[in-house]
Image (cartoon, rainbow, N blue to C red; front, side, top):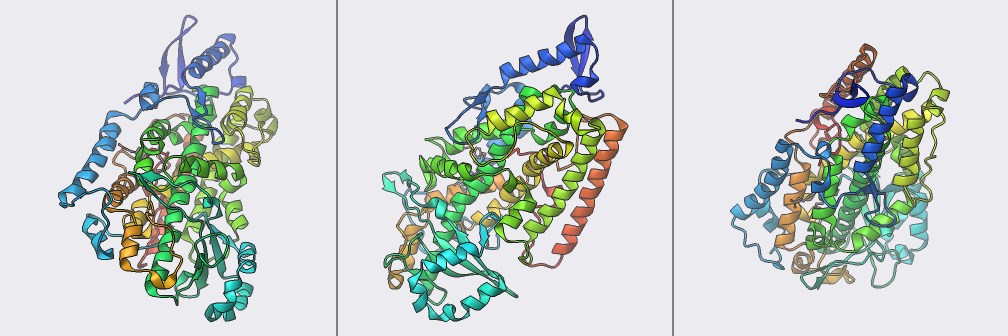
Length: 557
Ligand code: OYP
């Protein structure tokens, strides 16, 4: 496979050969004019190859490439990864047709058991894996104030004020879905709702839904569904919530907040940091394959003839509008787990493994980053005076994260601490956060009624009129379900050529001091792994997505 150069081999005044080994150097560590001019020449060359592109307005910028074929060889999948990527999807689709399914477009399933016919290799427990959507209390109050019909829902109204005081009612609000244009698939309009769902934290059972409204405003056609309603009505209401969850989870938590955020870091790093730069060496293993997977995502998944357009309710214009809405309110603060949990009011939620593992991982990553940064930057002023680093942050904050009014990342780095936080965000997002959103996909989406990719009928307005036939005609049809299963399996399965978190196979750093920092990082990851395994032992529903050994070093899928 191709090796990434980190050291220049000078012949005359030309860079002829580049090797991987060598001491990391900031521009101020290079003293010879020739060395400095080579740094400049390398960056000029890279800036010609790696250019910014606004794929669409009001989302982060990306790499200028029409498809992955336009990318330089250094940024491409190697052969093993490429043939596996293409082969695995074919395998999944073949596996589905081997089950002798009559894959007819527009054909509904007969009943819920029918979905099991496409349940091959793996069976998964039912729940959700998007952690971004719980918000606490203040929103609950707004919700309650707008709801006259609560008065009639006496069975829960009685205890509600008490529960609110105890702080164990949570709201999942899909307001961002309100008014998103729905896809038209084979001449049939699909449907989108913007539900509100109240969850109660039961002392033993954990979070359970207690009330659902399938639109932002209550009225006679937007009733509040309750567990005491006719069972099929309550079931369909929950499916509607989960359909919104599919969209928000895939497009916002997964695509925008991991893939697209890390692509900005990736392009900036390639454009602004020479290969000998310590920060280039630190980041590069965490950026492997991200450009190619994102190019494939744009051309094969999100484009006007891509998979979303074919089977997902937000395919076509909807997905971009949704991403633009989220990007408008995206903050750098929310990419830091500590603040994210605080701001969402979920610091006290019990058995919230995603939160606990994220916090532990953040600390381990931050220690590691801080160890490396301190080797090369002795003071804040060394950060301030590193002109390459300043050009890098400018590219990140001004070029990449363009048009994002409240983002809150300055275009200059003034202190070591600011640098450490940003690098920790980059590494946390490309490892832990991506694993948390990507790796559970098949577990939660394979049972299609649990997380449907589209809805073919509007939300129910009459609780008493919901039938199983209506549910089946609303859920994805047989062919849409098969595609959802195939793609989520393809993306969520363990990747055959994965480099696990903290494994640095392409030794970028060679200094003993840097290697010691890496060793310590790996030791701490191993301890964390043992802690997570021990915590999960004997649990019926395990949460192992944030085991370092199961996480990749970068976003490669
Ligand atoms: C790229 O050969 C990616 O058609 C996935 O994209 C699938 C393909 C290409 C298609 C391969 C082919 C990965 C990057 C990304 C992302 C985040 C959003 C993922 C959403 C997945 C939704 C799957 C369900 C569809 C019904």
